[in-house]
Image (cartoon, rainbow, N blue to C red):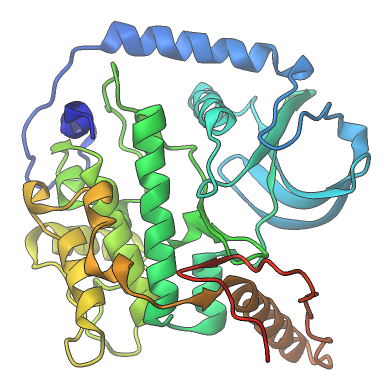
Length: 384
């Protein structure tokens, strides 16, 4: 990997937590950053006639979409499940209102630029973008069952074979982002790691990503509860900060609860969201030892992997490429990804029906006549 991968960046200017700072960072590169933002702003102005796509070159028009239902909202926009009628393609359509504030507009352009350039099986596919009045519309791969946050809520804690699949996929996505685009994600958490209907795991939401080369990381971005200690303190940070965030994420998926701020009891299952709770949590991340999986309940490969991710000293933390050589990734634990996805979708449908007092829906049954079943680890063996 290129030597400049670990060139430090800093958030010292934006430390608002009252925590001990790790030192001031470089101020060089501001003019270069301004130039790059100005260049990206021009993308928004020409979106109306833009024709982009990873797998398709589509001429996207607002009238060619049928909205099936809303998937979620936040961050200045909404996400819906839609059908692109000319090709009968199911997509996730993200509508972002750009009249909100300049900072949001810049965030949208950064996200658009990065997604447009990403061509990886470990990154959510991007079909294209267009303008509709004051909105920027982005069309992406529809991911069902959805985020790993949702998967965990439906299925509970995940087993080591499933965690190994997630680990390999996320690491390969992170390596791709840096090796090809010289960027880091900066917002790794369960809700930004998604599964599609074939059980493939992909990274999403680059709205808070930043390019590493010739730029200065001078904004306090990302989800603070998953931030590495060096980022919380406003100190220098590198791509290894994503490794810390992923270590917390993987441990959360194994435990079924957020690793910090819990004694293992029946407290909150997710990261605390109250103002005082978050402050206490950030203090714990900075000042207390990193959490560890119980040795008597989890395989040593998984425990050691999480320990390597959660080294408090970033110099002792492994890089994503180094972690791909870890014993956890080398385990021979085949997973039928399609069956895994089907089980999650069917379980979620039954839970929703039960909550609404309705009879359980018929299960999703996949056509197994096709000879190739996508798996990670090995191919699914045909039934006798």
